[in-house]
Image 1 (cartoon, rainbow over the protein chains, first blue to last red):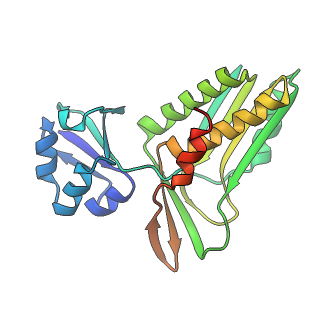
Image 2 (cartoon, rainbow over the protein chains, first blue to last red):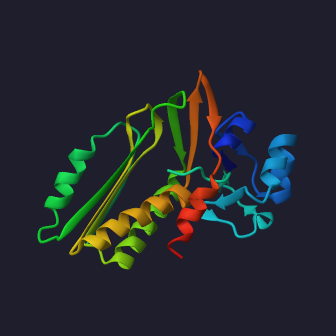
Length: 79
Length: 148
């Protein structure tokens, strides 16, 4: 399995904070798992992805193996 | 040189941190401390900060290390709340100690600008019983540009 973690307003759009999905998972697989408005947000340049805590320079190159955690990160709103 | 970074989900009293922090650095020339609190007014009933532990803590530790190196600090303390807070509650505490005042003052300013604009926190406010996500402000990015 791959764990998705939705941060900030993405959690509201997804209707949950975490979601376990089948492994492996790539960029197109991720978009296919998400509903329209959520997929649009994730595709927006402002939303970043991290794999196991490491920010991806190119999120479309996502390749998550079993046991991985993908964080979906909207723009931060400050501490 | 000592760096302490703490993320906590419960309220804290800033004075309980600052005393022991300065005591731990005998011979210092100056300590500068900033405490940010949840602002009253604007109909804000509560504030919630979400973080992502695998990135938020390492990011704060890197920020602390870069501040210590850049300003030649003797020590740096960063305490940040997560979870739900109410007006008047402390959100963040940054305290720096150094041989001379300028380094300590600038380090705190540097850390606060970077915490606001770059750290992995997401904020929402509760107004009139409804939660609203807070979007990044252009001013946060202008503040950080001062240090480049």
